[in-house]
Image (cartoon, one colour):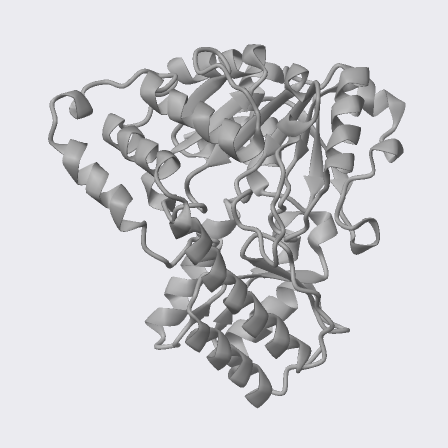
Length: 388
């Protein structure tokens, strides 16, 4: 059996390897404290489940959905964007339903990248941006995100010959894996850059509802004229603890959204109707459940940051996401420190190098476990004399 050349260009998906390592350690009887994958441990709110039960057995729910999404769901998205961001979206051609935002992000390069084209991708970043560009025959050009530049890409440093071949610019704020936030001034710079250079701005806004200490994340589409050059991806996964439901949306520039819809219509048959109808309830009902979730994550963040700082780290509390981007102690690499935590403490984190070259020297903690486990993790670190 001869595999395609494109398959040989991509590594095994990062979180598959992590899950395999976790299973291996648990088989040995190790009690794992899992700060790995960003999968909320909190339940999907009851009113969303209730709506799902109501529609699940209807004849309509089991039939083929529209590949672009049910109009009622797209209308709910439009209303939610208007209420949340004051952004007007036409449900007919500026919104497309996704089987989770990962699916849409993975398919987008097929609509815009030809062999030899470049996608400008932050480094470190969610692996799908780079992998999907490669699968489409494109070339990822990595934009280093460092503490020095507040984990924002420095657009002025991109060479002119690279910009000339570029088609897409990816941004993701609030950011995975660093937890960094971006303001509207930065978003305006991105919009202006894309307009000047005829690029499509690809905004991954999966963590927009996870803000702490009064911080309220913005959408790029709030910038005047942004819709001319922007497609934005959003998901109900993190906002409503619906990761396994696989439901999200792409919104923004109608040409870009419809190009993605053409790819999707030839690959999948759309998201399950019943899930779309339950998602309408999530977007349209009271958002008190989101506030309650954020309070829990904020408390967990504080416990972990304070605990690590008591061991010598000097971490600031991230304003958003449920991730903590933690530098490794001197003499360690991302991989070696990840191994040490697992072997000595039974603590599973993600090596920063798995998100790109600029992620070296960090590990990512996801606070998707309860406070008791976080406290236990700090105690294990102290017992193993692991300090910064």
